[in-house]
Image (cartoon, rainbow over all chains, first blue to last red; front, top):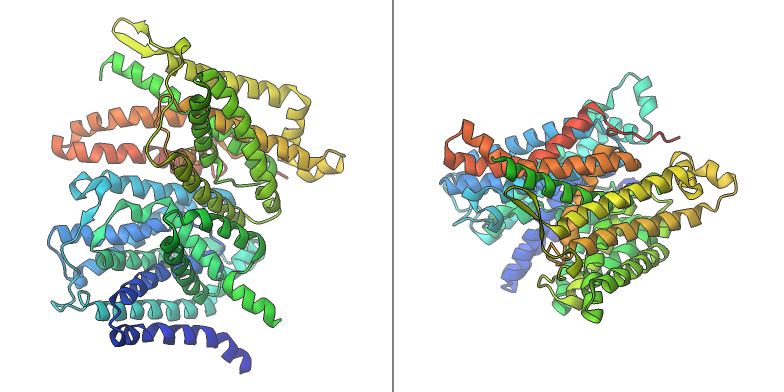
Amino acid sequence: MTELLKNRTVPVLLFVLLALVPVYASLFDDRFVLLFATRILILALAALSLDFILGLGAMVSFGHAAYLGLGAYAIGILAAHDVWEAWISFPVVILVSALFAAVTGAISLKTRGVYFIMITLAFGQMAYYTATSLSAYGGDDGLTMWGRTEFFGTDLFANDTSFYLVVFGILLGSYLFLKQVAASRFGRVLKGARQNEARLNALGIDPFKYRLAAFVIAGVMAGLAGALLANHAEFVSPAYMSWHRSGELIVMVVLGGLGYLHGAILGAIAFLALEEILSGYTEHWRLIFGPLLILVVLYARGGILGAFKGRGK
Amino acid sequence: MSATLLAVQTLNGLQLGVLLFLIAAGLTLVFGVMDFINLAHGVQYMLGAYLAVAGYQLTGSFWAALLFALVVSLLAGLALEFLVFRHLYDRDHLDQVLATFGVILFLNEAVKVIWGAAPLSVPIPDLFDGSLQLMDNLRYPVYRLALIGSGLGVALLLYVLVTRTRIGMLVRAGATNPDMVAALGVNIRRLFMIVFGFGTMLAGFAGIMAAPILSVEPGMGDNLLILAFVVIVIGGIGSIRGAFISALLIGLVDTLGRSLTTDIARLLLPPAAANDVGPAIASMLIYILMAGVLFFRPSGLFPVARS
């Protein structure tokens, strides 16, 4: 029981604190914090989905930002054709990301190790260059949306506070869903495939379709994050899918602690807060962040949650 | 498309292929021998170009700049190996990706601080100035021909080094079974360092050669790095021969694809749509090629046996 409590303390605390952000924002009339927190939660959703395949299944996808872009472009392009209703655009987002994940996953998952890293990277670039050549939808410059997605005609997305709650709800739902999946037979097969594929084969289980299913789930979630990101910025740009963004998502996951799921959320908070603070000091914040990242990789294995765990043992 | 245009585009494709080979050769050697995935290889190419600019500003001579940039590229690569990469050889690929990503962030920003964000350039050396009459109505810049020639020269040199010398034999042996090579009394760490330094110098050389014809700017290595990854994945990671063949293949497919796809799309689609679809397909072409190759041969065209 205490073990169970210990395992749940951090995520419960995390989500309670996140739920209190709008309260804080309205008390102190701090719109910046609310918008910044919304952005963090959206990228946390993408990082969470990446942790699901990276932490559980050891699939180092280096093209995960492509889904952010796919989701964002689906919303942006529909909006350009005057389709604003969430009941049309969100299913489209889900369908497009699932399709892209299924096709690229089926090819990528035939490979292993470093080939997988590079082929996912290449697919990410493919999506990126496709977006830059969409001259009808802004090409390199991106696409400005003149508004946000409507929800049955209401302004659920347009109001900052309710939009934050929508994002929060999707993140919480996704987290609980992935937690369930991880604990199920499906999740155990994924973990088993990471540890010893030969044994799994001997049991008569083909890990390929489990991996592919996980890849599609993660893709759809990241696609949703992209759809939210487009609404948040009211702007869609190829930069959403640049490989730097894919790298940053991996950094978030590893920074928080690989494989915990809520670690990815912590990592996203830490990454974006650090970026915000450092860029407040100097525009060349990457000069500090780069070496910091190297130091984390070299000396702080296990990320934020790993540090807690290491001390506890 | 006319024969002249085809010839020009073929030469342009070869030129891109040669640049890609210079970068991919180091990348594939480092990966083949050390099982080390170095994302920072692209910024080392960029560093080579910036050093050429700095060398030119100091001396006013392309040749002195070439020498200066080669030496400093090598030193910078060895310093990076000593400070960062050396501690990552025993780690998994994820850690290597992350740490070298950190190096990219740092170096891309560092050149911005030192040289500014505006594109820089190095003039073409006098020796290779002007252009050559290749066909009736085709003139092609001498420098670009020299670039293709020097790339092919490096490829030949590498071939001789890898297949005919003792160090090349050790590199090949190290790529197949590093533990056995170490057990036979070869200082594998020193071998790693030589291979790494050499690979860095090749990337730096590519950067120097590109400096007079491409704009030297922060992030210039990032796109080429991705292309170099595509090259070594298609060629088979660890294979120099594979890297050479697939670099030329990628260079040609990418360059010719860009001028041909719109024409082909026009045959099937109305002109306005073709102008949209053509470039999109052109930029996807090499990735489609890679996906196709990997689907049928998951370890590339020239897989290296590893034990």
